[in-house]
Amino acid sequence: MGDSFDLFFRRKPAMMLIALRKVSRAKYGSQLAKDVDCTYSHAVKILQTLEEMGLVSFEKKGRIKIIKLTPKGTKVSEHIEGIRNIVG
Image (cartoon, rainbow, N blue to C red):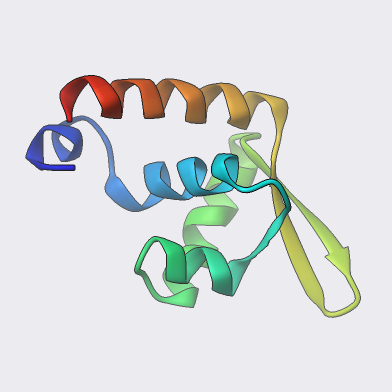
């Protein structure tokens, strides 16, 4: 991915949505931060915004929060991935 993609999207939030869609199971915040190469605290801020937008949901299992795409988040991530493939 080059500069064309960055022109249209903020890289980290877009890549988080794509990363969540590509896995068959839910992810933890620390795993997601690693996948998109950002700090855990930055990932949490982004995820809170995505939750407010209704794109992700959190499920608490003990002390761990599991992150999942909502149906709306899945649609948005599919469109982002499609645009990413077009602009390269």
